[in-house]
Amino acid sequence: MNQIGQWNLSGIGCSLMILLAIMTLSTVGLGWVVNGVVLLLVFLLAAPVIAVYGLRWWVQRNVVEDQCPMCGHRFAGLNPVKFNCPSCGEALEVRNGRFVRPTPPGTIDVEAVEVQQIED
Ligand SMILES: [Zn+2]
Image (cartoon, rainbow, N blue to C red; front, side, top):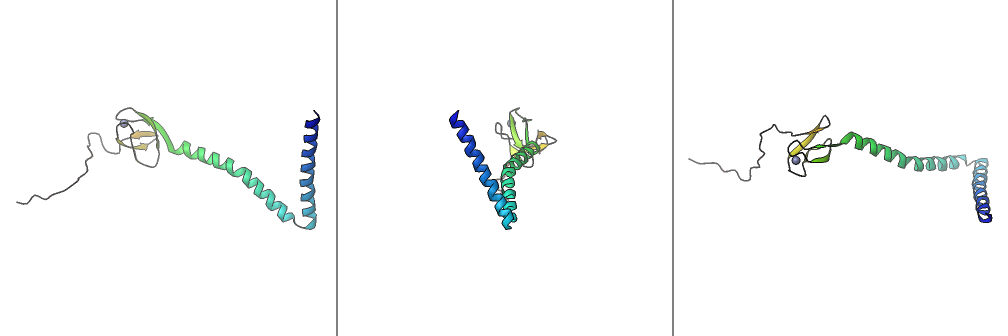
């Protein structure tokens, strides 16, 4: 009990000192310093909150979780970019919150490795 009372008293003393320092600074004419420090503190406290909410908003807008239309594998994809299914490797993109193939069904993507002209 005694320790808690002492701790509380020292806390009040600390805040009194800060208040006294703020009052002294503002009477001397350094109110702008106090304002700057207060603004900085408010910014430092608000920045992580804004960052967390901004990130959540961005994730809700851009991360889509759906099933692969080819193999049914469920995973999350990013909205603006094209990606491949981690299970079957099918190229996919997000359209209206769903995974769709950018190529029409029945299309087989092939990469030309070497193209030779046939001479006759
Ligand atoms: Zn797949």
